[in-house]
Length: 120
Image (cartoon, rainbow, N blue to C red; front, top):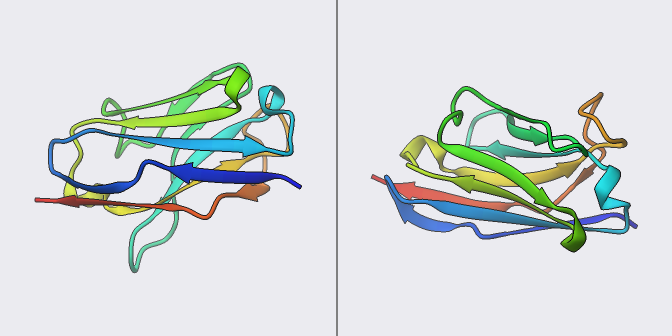
């Protein structure tokens, strides 16, 4: 059974930094593409960043230049480092795993989410 567990959310002030973590179990982590999504109240879920098994990354325009997604395969963990946080970054952040090593199709496995709240 594949499980994803996020951590690292919290309440911060605008301009602060935060690092989210996602531990993946039940799947060969090194050959799995991963992503971070977020959903703010009343808004649709948004893709924030992706990383392939080969660590090729992509970012939404809304976080580009302020965020970094990376993975450490030996500990089955993916991270999202977010800097210069803005109130509009407030959302529940979810990590997700794809069926294979690239970002193709829909994410298949999801974590429970971690709340990030940025106060102005």
